Length: 187
Image (cartoon, rainbow, N blue to C red; front, side):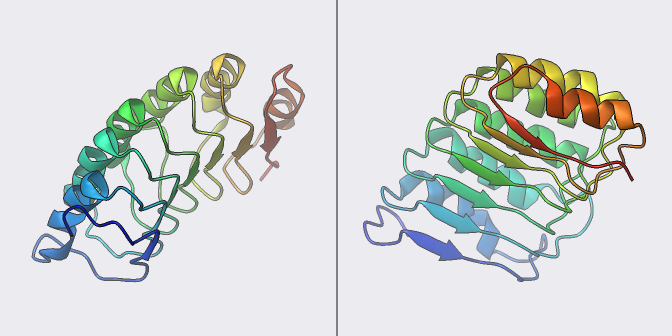
């Protein structure tokens, strides 16, 4: 869809993307070329685990997109490698304001979550990040606190339903002297 000037909302939710599916190969190109695409919904896409193709393409498009404001990846597998790739795209993006990574499998494995938090510290547009119902544990609290304290834009972080076992972790996140509302609870 090169130089599309009319698509504002694109809903590609609940598809069966895989390496054999050619559709997602053009996703990054479409995001990059579209001057009007504001909302992209990729909720519930059933990619094969460790299949970083779609999110890598998405990341490439995010790097140059000037219009995409909302990206929904809820219930779409996003392991550590995928999150690292996505963080690279978000780092270069200056239009994305809302990111939904609810129930995507995002955890604290080999630095993907750490890389996303590093991006949040510098990103000037991303206001809302939903990470609810992911295997994020108490040891991530320090990293989130640093990101929250340094982020110039983040106003809402959702960790509801994550694996925060210690009440003090939730207390620290919710009562940190930052400009961000944190939603979290103890499992």
